[in-house]
Length: 373
Image (cartoon, rainbow, N blue to C red; front, top):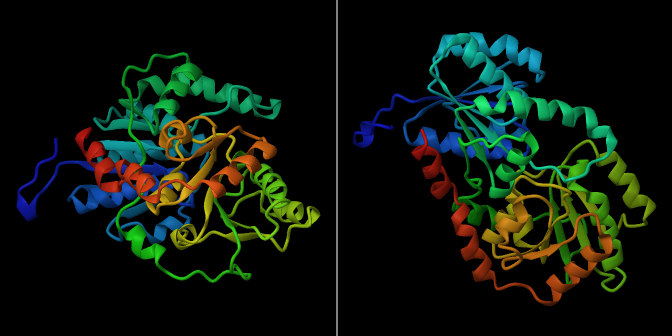
């Protein structure tokens, strides 16, 4: 338990957060939000990164030390973690990937440290996946069957991710629970008020927005196809995509091939996506799978109508089965275009979606993390 004595409170907790890097992903942002809040509550925090890189280094509390492994491989983690565990004597270790989680659980056994390993689980794959993922899925099944059950706690970021992990691992995982992501605080509103430097004239135009890494799982190709169909009836519509990733070059060529270069803009990573959200008509998430879906909550906090694929597992929970946003099938550009049209014609009550987002504030969620220390 945490001990506090007024402003000079102290705690015996010493927390380590382990990430592959601090790039602009959802799991990384979640750990930064939790860690910063822990520091504000006088809890000692350190980070360990496979690679000490990423935009979130800039928003991590400056009092937090970030150590580096130098690699993100399982072998590198297994070589490094035992020494760090022995030297620092952490009370709790939070992990956010299967390799770091595996290495942390094994390292605890090797060092016989008293640290509690909290394995946070952030993803859920579709029921069927292409054969190219077969090798990786076999490795994951082995990890989740033989190693993951030995974590002290397993925290799914949604009900669906925890249920998926239990089915995928063929384990009951009685130490499992779920805690939704801590997504935003009141700073989102001041950031949203900043001006946007649009690369084109947006006057009297429908503005659609996608905020996601440019990866296969985020499926911006279906988004582009759906937008192309939608644009047949709304020729003045514009789509802005915020994010970077390995699919960038392919998407740039895809947009050019479709003749949509004057209507779709890849804007790269934006340190302040909220000002873009505040000025869009509809926020769209086109993912094949999601552990949670932070951007949906962020847009809702700003009163925006959202459209999301009904992918496993977070969006349906966030949107309460479609009550607080529009859901459509995965990888179906026709259905996506139709759903966007419905969202434009019948936007949801801004106050309703704002109210529904309040359960995901950093303050309310971090309290749940503090309660399990």
